[in-house]
Image (tube, rainbow, N blue to C red; front, side, top):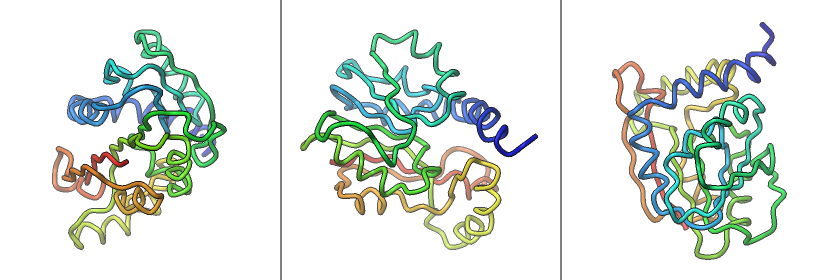
Length: 207
């Protein structure tokens, strides 16, 4: 199997299976709570957030590079009342007007975007003043013993998981892009201790 086939056809399905469990779903609901109006979603994936959009969301503009991920999301998109439009493939270059959206959402995508600062700055540009960014992501752990393993494993992780990084400091990236973190929760996701290099999670809201 070629690397291109792996990245374009296999990984989106593996991501859908691994990220649709109950434990992650219980984090998606509070992450999406508070979204309003027109929402920019960076890394729409297979639409796993769709069921959690609150009633105040009027439309979603989806940025998603994977055709396979977009195809997998079709059933979820068909079940929602919220209009969802795929409006781009690259979160680093969003072809949307300034101040055209009320909120932004990104879940488990900042780890794979080559330049997450650029993507977060694009979201800052597109979201109006007073709008908020909602993030659910994994990243660098607080303990040096876990960080050492994250650094060791990251080259392999990037090779087999579509460029996924284990060592990104998500709150620092968000603030470095011009957002101000207003709410922050961080903890290991449920799972065995051996999985800790992959499971340190951040849930935050920034404005």
